[in-house]
Amino acid sequence: MRAWSLIALGDDRQYGGNIGYRDDPQRIYRYDSNVPNSRQLETGDLVFIRNRKFLVGIAIIEKVTSSFAEKIGRRCPT
Image: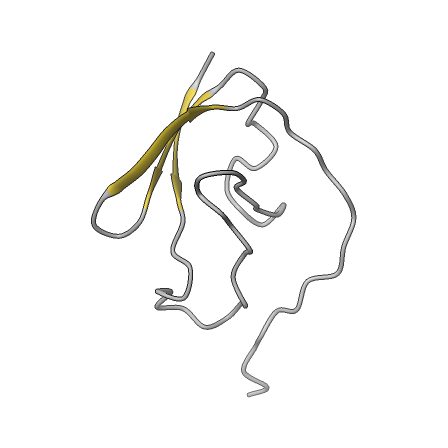
């Protein structure tokens, strides 16, 4: 088992380059392959979910699922 610190910011993101994730920290944590170590999280790992100021939750990963989807990435054209 490994332990991870995951951040759930909602609309409190300082970087506007993406539209964020539809997390519900009490139920589900979403991320994509651009997140560092995204392929390392496994069932049974311990996670600490935090926002910028506080620890919001502690959990054991019950299941990791993956799917293919397009993600909108906002980039400055210049």
